[in-house]
Length: 126
Image (cartoon, rainbow, N blue to C red; front, top):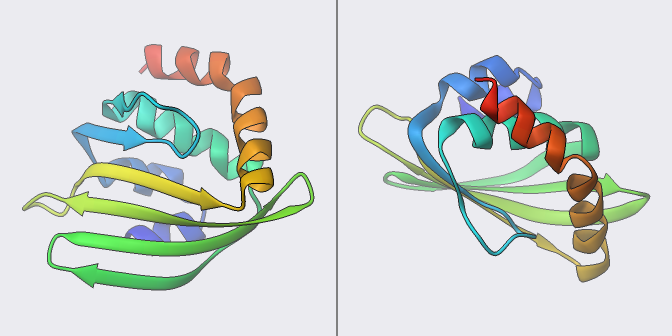
């Protein structure tokens, strides 16, 4: 369900899958981002930053899911993994992203940093 929504770029459907108290853990920021509004705003921007995004592997263990992805950022290939924790209703309560290699992760950090004011404004307006 989550994978289908992301791959279809159906961000409203992704939003419906997030718990109100979801915590987003970024690959490029030390501090976690708590709450559905900021998590949704981040996801809506990152989908614009990643080019040729695709999931290539999916793992599941009870309420834990992992989705390995590949994409391009500023012409650099990036590989990452979305680690999700789901509650009893199937809503995402924790969303942690890890990426590699370093140069592509730095490009991701730069592109998302450029958009962070817009992300904060979008989250505040929800």
